[in-house]
Length: 429
Image (cartoon, rainbow, N blue to C red; front, side, top):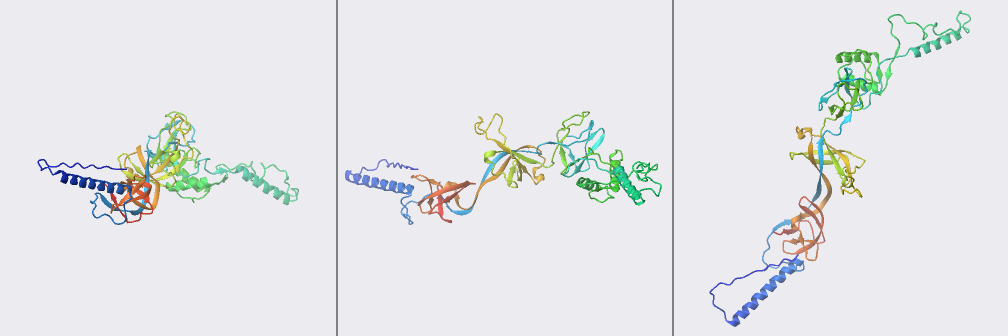
């Protein structure tokens, strides 16, 4: 860039007119001085006149002098997001019947709380990862016990010489054999039972004990002691004290939930979308450009700027694996020019920092690029060289060419043979 400066000098009125000879010599001297100053200015701008020694007769140049520093440059980018509780999911309600009570939207349910009522029977929230896939309780084993007794009777008959000496036939009906399946039990006696086992039993027992209903060992066995604790729990709920937990009595989740919009009305039959839920922690959902989503790495740190301008720290928790084209098409050949996007979920650990805000637009700031140990100067220190490219003006008036790298936070990465850390450069005014 070439800059031309023109000085206009007005002579004072009433001054005596010099003689022709003196005026000619004076004009020649002024013209020569103007040419010299212009030549020096051009040479300096082209970066061609500079040794290490500056011209002591040159006028001082204005501007701030700064040092070339070595630092880490971080490029930060921004993308729009939406604050909320995340996508509402349907609760897996397996109770069958008519919906007789629903909670309010936005209510929070914890372990032991009622999520809804079906046929006026509560459906209770418990914590766990396994779904409720079967009823839990003691099961009768009459057939198994009868089979064992029949086998034992047959062995006794074989040991008695084929049943000939004791007057009993080896083919005696099990219904008449002692302990057989057809044996009538004494009035008031209970049938033999079998203890149910499995990880789902341990999961339920863990919740039952956490609610204060104890007296059994928390393990994978549903014993009579477990059934006694279940009866006490059922009494507190106001339902029949059967000692058995039906498959529709409990719904499991990882933790407490926030009730979403109901998908049905009171009096309707239970369906797949009877009630929805989300987690209770506020998070941010970002529809990130699929072509520019390299920043979205699990556990990557980001800054969320709330609608009130306050920043809170966030972390990338989930990245969608399927890109979605914008409505009306998108991407290459889509016609709208808008890129396809993927959903990115950002969690916020400090929920108190969000305040009372439950939803709204936010801005997510993330690190795009980072260069460690770069030589940097303020962007305003760059000058355009006449031969092209960028340069820096040293404190003594020389111009050195530089290559630019990352621009970030008002600074720029510079490199070149003549650039070194601590070198003084001028920021022109």
